[in-house]
Image (cartoon, rainbow, N blue to C red; front, side):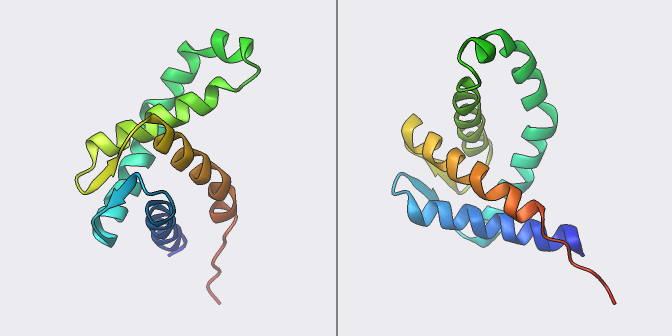
Length: 114
């Protein structure tokens, strides 16, 4: 139950990001749910490899290169997800930044069964 609630909240967050940033479009809630699924798969399988490879550059920039990695992976998710489009790197960077700000808040949600 807890995972389903978080999945729906992340989908709503993706829709909010698309509403907030004019260069990001999404066709509907079902597309947003699919985007959340693709984001979780990319974060599980691709992100650790890219962060390991870019570790020296990340250390040189004092961690700021992580923002670029987030934006590139967000753009990759847009390429892999039908109904989700990002127009340009700056829009991807802004969307990834908003997503990374709100993710810890959604992750802290804990639904208990009585």
